[in-house]
Length: 201
Ligand SMILES: [Zn+2]
Image (cartoon, rainbow, N blue to C red; front, top):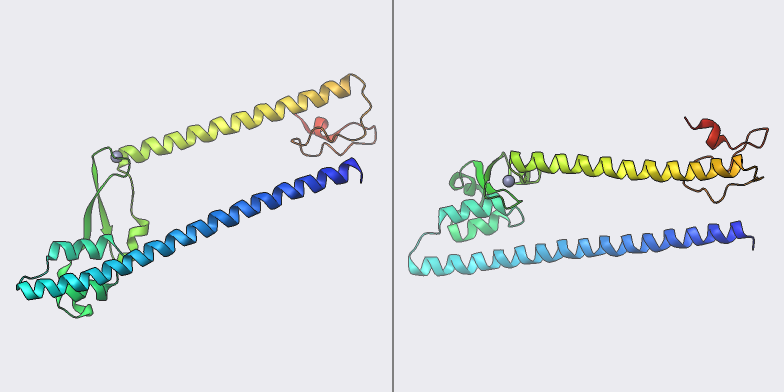
C-alpha cells in the first residue's frame, strides 16, 4: 500500500470512529427522552392516586398545582391532570388560566421572566434567559466565534507561510500533502507553483 493510500485509510478509520461516537450520543439522548416519558407516566399514575385520596378526604384538587402541571409539564397528559380535578379532559383548560407564567432565569441570576404560551407546546419557543443574561450569552458566543476564527486564521496563515518558505527555498515539491489545512495545496499551475500561494492575498 502506498503512503497516500494508508493515509486515506487512516482518515476513513477516524471518520468511522467519530460516527460511532455520534451513534452512542444519539442513543443516549433517545434513552434519556424515553426515561423522561416513563417518569411523566408515573407522575400521571401518582395524580390518579392523589385524586382518589383528595376525594376521600373531601378536598378539592389544588388549581394552582393543576395550572403548573398544565403549563410547565407538557409531557403530562391533559387527561392525567383532569383525573384528580374530577373534571372531563375538555374542561381542564377552564381552570388553568392563560399561559402567562413566571419562570426563573436559567442562569440562576435570580431574575424572573414571563412566558406567554398560547398552547402547551409553546414552551419550546419561550425564552430561557432574562434579557440581561441573554445579552451576555450572545456577546460571549460572538466573542467565542471571533476567537475561534482568529485561531483558524492564524493556523491557516502559519501553514501557508511554511508552504511559501518551502517553495521560496527552491524545494521541488510536486505534492503538498504536508499542508492539508490549505485548500488546493495539491494543485500546481503550469510552472509547478502551488495555486494555494497564487490565490493567497
Ligand atoms: Zn438572568
